[in-house]
Amino acid sequence: MLFIIQALSLAALAAKVLANPLPQQIHHFKRTCSTGPDTSSSFLANPAYSAAANNAATPSGYINTFTNLHASNNADGYQGYTILSAYDVASCANSCTARPSCQAFNVFFERTPPSSNSYNSTCSTATIKCVFWSGGVTAANAVNTGSTQNGFEIVIAGSNGYIKSAIAASPGYGPSTYLGNNAISAPNDCNGKNTYMGFRILNDAPFNATRCAEACSAQSAYNIAHPGSDGVKPLTCQFFNTYETFKNGVNQGQWCVLYSQSWGKGVATNTGYTYGKDVYTIGSSYAYANATDAGVCVKA
Image (tube, rainbow, N blue to C red; front, side):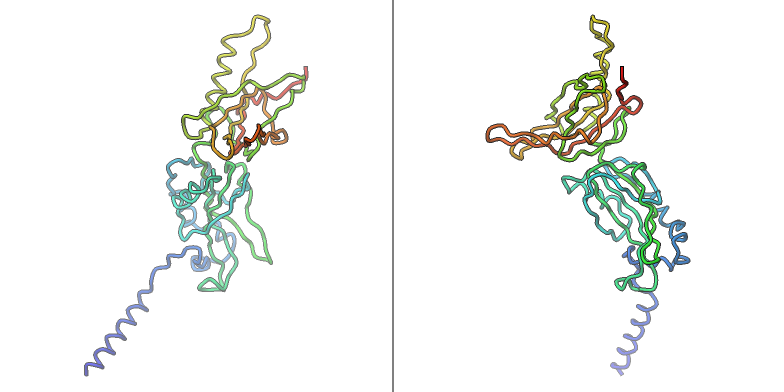
């Protein structure tokens, strides 16, 4: 009799387990066809993806650069990606912070082809990706809307971008241009004039591009307030390059190099130098231009 009771108890337990399956926690294995037609348009219109993106809190130390786009970034300095089990911006931020070269990241849902790894291989899945970048992620470089592979449409939904506060665009300046381990080595402008306006070395605080923007603006204000006696229009700072310098691999501080004209990556040729037995190198180099007046040279 005891055996029969135990058998009945086990059967009841099994029925209970089958009636109440464990909740699906692995979001990137979730069948997209379980929430509607398994099409790219249905994926893009899924309100759950929009809700996740719109409700995501911005992590401390980062600035939200865009929210809920249908495109991922094609930024500077690709640093790889991880797959998340949930739309967890904080987790992605922690991973970025733990990577010395990561300055920005992008989180999004990607429609992924059916896979034998999914618990149902006949439906596409929603993969949640966390992608790391050394350069800034902005709405302007969020241009990857997906692709078609073997007739299957890969699309993006719920895409959010975040950049570290330390390299985010400062008021009055445009987004950063990532120069990697190179610094600007500017030639003369179109009139043969030198655009270099000096430098500042900051070694009393963590790397922060805003301090260079303040130095650039302050230099302009000073020059305007103290014009030369020759009547020549004062130079104003319209562009700066900030980076870290290293002596034999040891950080020596943050540099802010100021210019009266904007320059592109083509003149970012300064990689450092060797002095005696010491090797000086450059890292985390970013350039910023005045958002309203980049100081473009006009031939006199």
